[in-house]
Image (cartoon, rainbow, N blue to C red):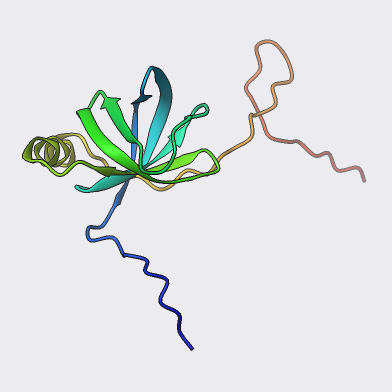
Length: 132
């Protein structure tokens, strides 16, 4: 048995990227990192809380993308999905990013900070000693 959940699939493929920027909603601004990007939208990881509900209009500023406007489509665990306003300027900005700046990257999972044992030593994860 299948259920019709009325979920619409993405129309364009998203590509993983590492672009940093700011998300502005009303009078607040939150630093963010683009996780993936397409001509129609993006997924962002927020560095702090964004007090906006799904359906809210936001502005995104990023160095390699410029200023983009969009609507929040989903929020979950500090991540936000944004659908860009459909206009020729936004499509041109994103196309330009893919043409001149985009480098294929693998997704990055959250990592824990490395332990540093000493003032001038290199960081390391763990060391083990074997005794005979």
